Length: 401
View 1 (cartoon, rainbow, N blue to C red):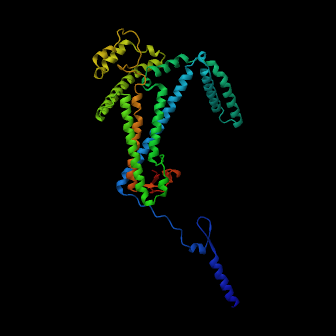
View 2 (cartoon, one colour):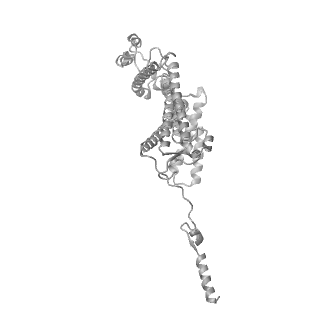
View 3 (spheres, rainbow, N blue to C red):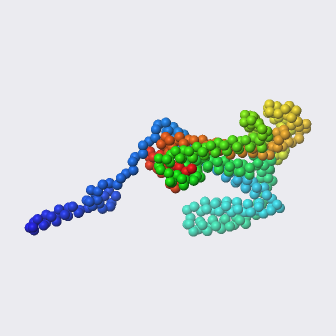
């Protein structure tokens, strides 16, 4: 072999072993470039058009429940804060240290916040030190106003608890309890929408892929049946235990009792709200709630309020006061019933309503899985939310049973 041929072979070999730079910055040799690309997963085929409205319905439903959950959570926080604030402000020093501790904490927070705001633009060290000193001083300065606002706050708290719409729900604490129950049912319904409800998916993991969809649909149908049975079970218990319907009543009779009670309690709620709008401004301007409504106003409220449409005439007449000059409690009176917690039984219907919504959600998931808009994946609970999935990919849900 000549020297020229040797140089040409070396040149050809050098050209073959040259490497190119890939778009991502890595080095790609000629042999790598000529290799077959890795197999790509098949593109997902969108489901039939009849499932698209159902998918939009599910997303809109989930958005509505998410907003409701946020609103309920904020309302619960507000009710608990109002309870703590009024309870702390209405406690006199002679009744314990709760009022003193509350005022010390409030003073410390206010002074620390104001100091932090006033020293904007100063050095971080000076700002932190001054804020700490101001907050510590507030803990001692809170004793200076231990008697301020005790009577006023006590009147507002007592009105809320004993003679307002909140009385029908069990006071501020009762409101917090019902909002917690509502939030729990909303969370369960949202978990059902995303396929993250509690389930046992051991069987699903051993099933062939073709069998998973029918198995998941059967499990969801069974879950829907349990939810619907729970719905009626709760309603039946409430109608019998709370609304005094006979146990041997038929389903139609129990529904009529429930409907009548709901309408009556809605009437009572409207009447109490009208009294709150009349008495509330007087209480907030310093009038005692026990003196904020006179007998003449109460009698006019009873005579013109439509009570005779719901109660016998003699019972309505018994609600009127003879001395129209004396003050009366601004709380609606329901003949033969206790006003405190009157609406608690009605609010307990949140539980059957929540189970009804979850049952409907399970039925909707069955339709979506057969339309191809929902994938059955046992590992879906360990993945990110639906928004992180590629465009056009159906929402993956658990296929547990």
